[in-house]
Length: 278
Image (cartoon, rainbow, N blue to C red; front, side, top):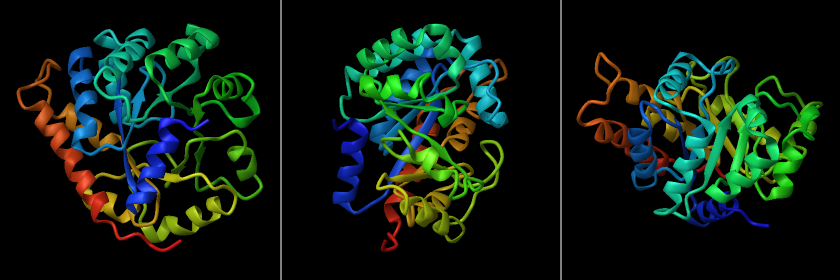
């Protein structure tokens, strides 16, 4: 069964370009502002959207995304509101893939079966759950795949050839390659640095490989897009949201132009990338 994610990468291949995957946290800095940013991402150039599920203990995230999660929770962010945001988005956009990204605990508390039913009804296309290893596939991965959702796994520089088949087993949609070790928002890797890793992953799978962590500028995005199937940008976008808030954490005038204008610059960088022949 083809999903929106499969279709989007098929379209990108036809266009001969890489994609831009953008991340924001649902409810950051408040529910309405977050929704308006979400709604504006496709027009700004986002090909796929990762929507963070706010959680109190995001151990794999750096300071920027941790702060975004806290802002979202303070503003009433919850799993119910995250799914409602996707439902609202789908009334205007039925093509752009949305991937929920985060941790297993909020899904477990919500109830796996109920979550999968509600996520599908809302229009969610895939999941990235950073704290569920392949050994725990029966918890969520297998039920999600059976329900028709893509389950996207992370591969890292420390994922060796012995481990890679386990990571790729039951993975669908795309593989998210974390270009550096450490938390989100750290220094970025270059295309020359990540090319061997992408080549190695592609020897094990036909899935597209999206590369993230540390992409902060249109130039970074262009560099990564020259060798990857997509460039993923999260912390840099979240930082734009944070820098558009006043001393009380309220959005200032111009926040949409500030955030979405930056996304448009990233998309322009990705579009400039000259693809390296496979």
